[in-house]
Length: 365
Ligand code: UD1
View (cartoon, rainbow, N blue to C red):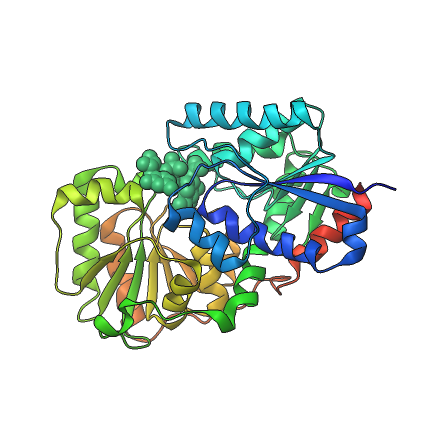
C-alpha cells in the first residue's frame, strides 16, 4: 500500500513549535513512514529570520516542500494569498489530509481551502475558545473548527466547547499539547541569550515582558500607560522585553525609556525559553507563553480580558489580569510578597502529544 500524503501547514511563529514534534514523531518511526508521508507547507505569513528561519534551524524542522511567500498584509489579503497559493498546490497534487495547527490566519485559510478541495482537515489545538470576537484568532478558531473533520485537543475545556458545537465524540481526540512536547524535548538545550552577561541578569531577578495584541499595542496612549505601570511596578527588577514587529512600529514613536527596561529583538526559541525558565515572572498577552510558564512553574500575568487556555489559570501559574493597566498593581503586590500560587501541569501535557496524533492519523487514513 502506498503511503498517504498529509500536508503539514505552518505559517507564523507560534506554529513552528507545534509542527516540529509531529515531524519528529513521523521521522523517528519506520511504521509511520510506511503509512504516511508529509509535505511541509510554509505559508510565509511570518518571514523574518527572527520570526521564522531561526525556529526552523533551532527546532530541526526540515526546509519546507513549498513556501507560499504570502508576506504581511491585511487579514483579508493574507487569507486570500494563502488560499490561492495552497489551492494551486492541491490542484497540481491533492493530498489525503491537511493538518493545521493553532489559530493563526494560515490555519484558517488552509483548512477552508483543503475542505473545499475535498481534502479532510485535522486541527491540532482544535476547540479552544476565548469567546472574544475582537481577536482575529478567535474568528480563525471558529472558522477552522467549522470545517475540521478531526480535532486533536489540548484540554477538556476544548472538548466541551466542541461538544457544545455539536461535534460527536468520535471526531475528538484529547491528545495533549504539542507546544509542550517541544518545550520538554528542548529543556536541556535551552541557551543563555547573548545579552545575559552584558545586562547583568541573575536568575529570578528580572521580568520577561511580551506584548503584541491589538487591544494592548494599537493605541499609543494606552500602550504608554501600560508600559509606565509595568516599569513602576517592577520596582528594581529589570524588564526584558523582546519586541514583536507589530509592537515596535508603535513603540518607536513613544520614546519610552527607563534604566531597568531592556527592549530586545524577537528572540530564538531556545534563548527565549531559557529567559522564561529563569525569570521572576512573565507579563504577557500571548497565549502560548502562558502554557510554557505553567509547565516551567513560573508566575505569569496575562494582560487580556479572556483566555482560550483556562487551564493555565485554573491549574497553572497564570492569572488573567485584564487590559486595564490599573489592574496590574494588586497582582504585582502578591508576587512581591511571595504569595503567588504554585501550579500543576494539566493532564497529558507530558511530551507525547505528537506521538498520539500521528498514531491516530495512521488509523484514521
Ligand atoms: C500573528 C498571529 C498571532 C500570533 C502572532 C505571533 C494571526 C491573526 N495572528 O500575529 O496569533 O500570536 O503572529 O507572532 O495570524 N511582521 C514582520 N516580520 C514578520 C512577520 C510580521 O515584520 O516576519 C510585521 C508585519 O509588518 C505585520 C506585523 O508584523 O504587519 C504583524 O504580522 P501578522 O502576521 O499580520 O500578525 P501578528 O501580529 O504577527
